[in-house]
Amino acid sequence: MSENIVRTNFIRQIIDKDLESGKYQSPSDIHTRFPPEPNGYLHIGHAKSICLNFGIAKDYGGRCNLRFDDTNPTKEEIEYVEAIKADVEWLGFKWDDLFYASDYFEKFYEAAIHFIKKGIAYVDDSSAEEIREMRGTLTAPGVESPYRNRTVEENLDLFTRMRAGEFKDGEKVLRAKIDMSSPNMNMRDPALYRIRHESHHQTGDAWCIYPMYDFAHALSDAIEGITHSICTLEFEDHRPLYDWCVENAEMPHAPHQYEFSRLNIEYNVMSKRLLTQLVSSGFVDGWNDPRMPTISGLRRRGCPPEALRLFCERIGVTKSENMIELQQLSQSMRDVLNEKADRRMAVLEPLKVTLTNLNHDEMLTIANHPQDETRGTREINFSNTLYIDKADFQEEANKKYKRLVLDNYVRLRGAYIIKATDVVKDENGDIIEVIAEIVPGSLGKNVEGVKARGVIQWVSAKDAVDITVHNYDVLFTEKNPQGMPGELTDYLNKDSLHITVGKGEPALLDAPIEEAYQFERIGYYARDSKSDKLVFNRVVELKDSFGE
Ligand code: ATP
Ligand code: MG
Image (cartoon, rainbow, N blue to C red):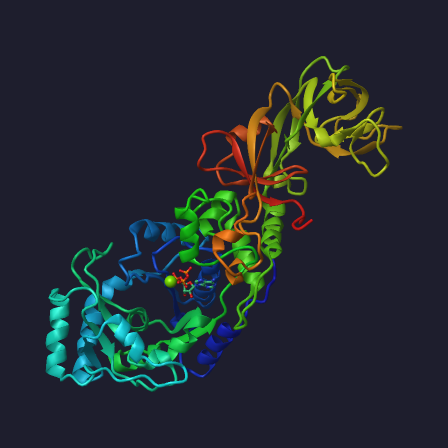
């Protein structure tokens, strides 16, 4: 989808100013990173951050790292690491360097020792609960810990022994010594290290103390020479701590943090923690269930990466929190798929049509795309027994009905005009077959005196393949399920998957997985990756009918 969106946003404007002012000499000095925690699969919110960070590096000719923020072994897994890499690549981005925050554990440790020696960090024996109580509130200052004035020697000794594994989980923490009465709660002696006797997916059992997010994140950015560290608004209040860590670690390079608003989309949740619950409860078929707002779910559904990138460009990057309409995502998919998806024919409620004046089969050549010749053609056998969709035939109808009517004409897509001459009904009076004839000379041509009401799709009965179609609805019944009272599960849409069996043209046998086709007049569909049978997921409808 070629679209001229002016690629600017407040972060790019900051970068431009930093270049103008000489803070950075060359656009190639601009260095960003995408720092996911490998505690789940990425969602569309992450796609926004990926497009922003990698997009900046690409457009400025700078660099962008993929860095796993793997400082909490309890929730992290190698499966997530691999899935995240695959998702970033699928979205169309290449990282300059791949790092793990755990690569820097030794450096973090040295920085912590440095802090202790400077007298700005101390080991605290208080329990987590005591620390919480001493922290104060937004209106009341905190209370200094009784361990706050330990000597440097004592702190060094205790911290070394924390690393050596002499203490149990929660027995001690290393805290920054900042200001217990700071109006910013994050500055009230935040924890820098905690004890966790747990194996780590990268470092195994080498460590039993793990650094806290703010400390590790700031130092990782500084170590990698990140210039613009972009994160979501909830970290705005953490920026003073970020700066404090960078400054006191006395790194040669000082990154700066900028915050933008998170992406929220109607009828969805954007949080790995909440999405995990849907997976573990079995409500969805894994992280890549096509209903999930995950990158892998969208991929399995058949959403092309271009569509997700287009969506991210269209929504832009700002500092104001808002809820994006689901329609915007659907429209980006349609805009891309209308251009790039090949057409195929399928009927979901087959009605037999017998052509009485056709006594031989005919191979027809049909274009894959009505506007784009470069997409080539395919051969389809046309025979005297076809299926059309039940909804495409009526015995009587007014002029608005642009389909097949008894004693009237309709064009079969890529084939002949036919005229319905009779119907066969079962004992209940339901139509089970339409008798029709082709108009000779009407293949790809108009015929004098014959006016087709419209164009409908068809499949040849003996050549058609059985297909199963999965039509999806939204996962949640509320626009903002997280903002509702009660449990998230109260708002799950129990009717979010509709399965239909139909007939498709034989070319669908070769449909590659996850590649979307337009099933003419029905919608965009892509072959499912989990089934060996011909199962097609609906990527998106042809038109927006949501809420009708
Ligand atoms: P989650 O709650 O889903 O785990 P997170 O922010 O904790 O989200 P991280 O893995 O830490 O997830 O995030 C990696 C990057 O993606 C961060 O820079 C984060 O700010 C960004 N990000 C996460 N969610 C969104 C979102 N909804 N919109 C935009 N960016 C997001
Ligand atoms: Mg997180």
